[in-house]
Image 1: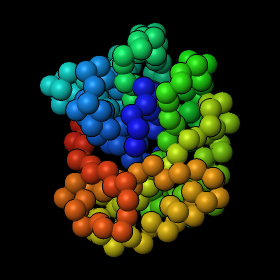
Image 2: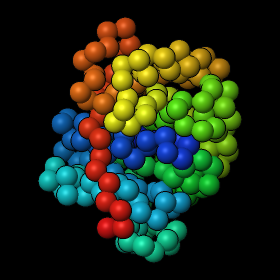
Image 3: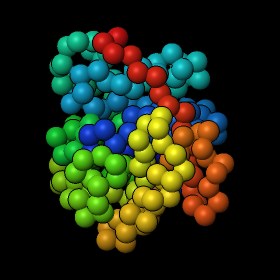
Image 4: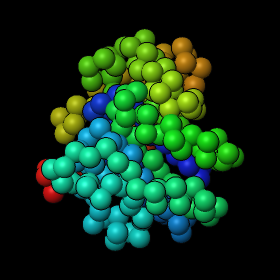
Length: 221
């Protein structure tokens, strides 16, 4: 997958966007000096990207989120500094967007800046084990709602079908055809299939495997 200067992860609530965004930022840092991760989840008061703040700082990855992140205050506000990464030509930005159309509204204010970029991708994260996205048709409905809310169109799909630490090889293999069907009805490519890192070596017939290290969660800071 070609590295883009702007990579946006959107999806249904609980689809795993944040964990993917953090892992993807770590992966970009292997190849690029300037990497930022922007947490635009104004729906979730815990702003879970901040749970990985220590690891991000250690790798010199800039984290930008609300000053109320990881607190008990649910204040749907985004700092003006979040515009800065879009203005740096050498920077690679990863955007973690809130769930469904409600969360995607926050992305709408950045839509003109994203559209001006000649190097961006907006990826729909789907977990077929989550409610309301258990079929390709249901997932497509969520996709269209997000697109309408943020005035941007998806460029690809991420299959993140899992049941957490209980995930086994079979769970990925069983949902891979569903991801392919979603790609067919949306006319979009399957950019990656995410797999827990310790399982990633078990897949030979599924391309574009992206290993994930599960993010630690800090409740209430």
